[in-house]
Image 1 (cartoon, helix red, strand yellow):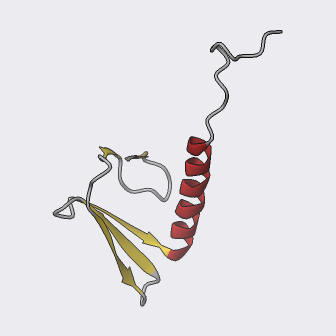
Image 2 (cartoon, helix red, strand yellow):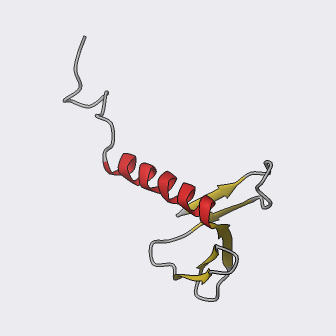
Length: 84
């Protein structure tokens, strides 16, 4: 998994992280502040602190990306490609 955050209003970290499929992940919920901490790595090497609304946006984005990744477009250059 790769996450790339650019310096933009409301985003406070610029980093590039690539994770193998077996990277340890966990979370903690902070009900008082309506936020969660998402931990990545066996020693929590990388953490995302994210509020409720932004977590919803992240889930929607990830769901759309996973759906698109699971349904690749047809190969336009392969043997089954349509010819004009």
